[in-house]
Image (cartoon, rainbow, N blue to C red):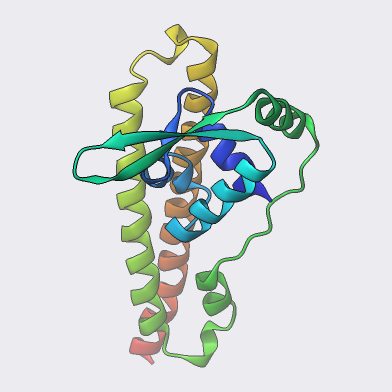
Length: 185
């Protein structure tokens, strides 16, 4: 159900086509909520049926008309109602944590390689977030309120990646001591 509200959230500021929404997903909400192209288009049809969004056909030269989706007042009201409803904590679903949990079944060296790979992935994502922070939020205290909400969302992503890196470093160091002991033995 949250895909519904993710799409509505992306339509708050301005109307977008399905293609534009897919790109917006990849560059903003997609950092913390995944959806495929097909899921987005399927949900757009559902939202249009519920009259939470309106579509306007825009003629294009040499190409099929594109639909530009706009948030309706009913959709805005539904989004506002949803925002103030309590939500559950998101469950942690992380494949790497399961692998580490039963890591004794493989060589420690192999698991350390996977941990190092994840460390690099998290480092790359952190660099992306820090770049976004620098480019779009150079003086966060001067932002209008709507942009402050987007900024604090980005800050959570930054802190999440920093914590993952700290855990990876701690775990790599901790397990590397085991490898050193096995080599000495």
